[in-house]
Image (cartoon, rainbow, N blue to C red; front, side, top):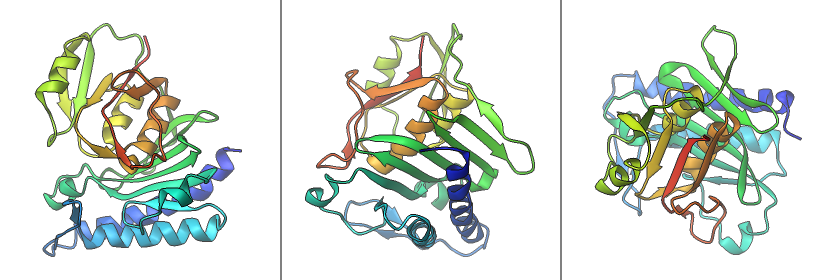
Length: 255
């Protein structure tokens, strides 16, 4: 059962991981980058955050397995039988982090079979902590401010589209032409989902590849605020597939 008590147990893990990332970000040291087998960048911040999250979740919930970007590969034959599991991106927006842009996040999602049922996103550079589930709705806390419930802007007649600085495509622009979009803004990492949940944007279409840990927490937060996310063809957007690579998707307000 997802409730406030459960969420409050997990939030400190995300914040602790974010603080470790931020300490490296503000250290002034050169950020050393290695390249993984899939050609994506890896830094010591990714590793530090992953260690904190893995240790924290394993201590709190030893019976729930973890699927993390920086963790060991888990064969589909093993994970296909998981009822619940954590889907984790310890540092989403590594390129933003490397280029000293603040749009990077910690993503933690609780999955039930092939759907995210709880999402937690922490944006350490903004001291912004988000969470969302169907049972609780979506919420945001910034530093000393009180928690604020988030609602997608369903009544807008003119839409703001949001996308990536690094991955915009002609295909995406063609799809957005079918909606009442008057402006397009950019954001890094899973913050694009958060902007929809906050009502600052109305649609996010992604044609290019992402991984399941890039989207799970954001989907939970956006959908819990009143948005909807599907595959690019309108089919349900599902997880724990044989391949962890996502297809295209669209996240938008419900009209």
